[in-house]
Length: 96
Image (cartoon, rainbow, N blue to C red):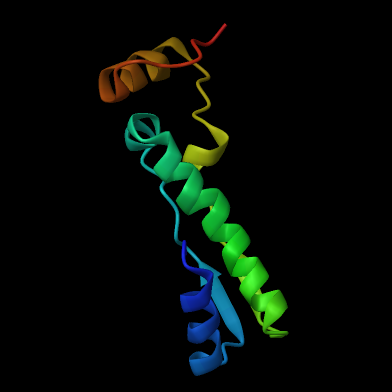
């Protein structure tokens, strides 16, 4: 994902009708430990994929997958909060 030339070569070889974009750093603790790596993979990697498809003039349909890690944890009760705190340690931002 970080090498647009490799992406373009892969498009030429595979001629995909669909591209399922699953490449991302989604482990939140790691994203904080190495934010530059996360930005490179998630941000630049996605831009590289889109640019490679555009530059190669492919008519591929791109399907972006996501997870709750993108949209955050929704806490709706004290019981759920305590469970999340036990599972994850620090909850940020604290529900208010």
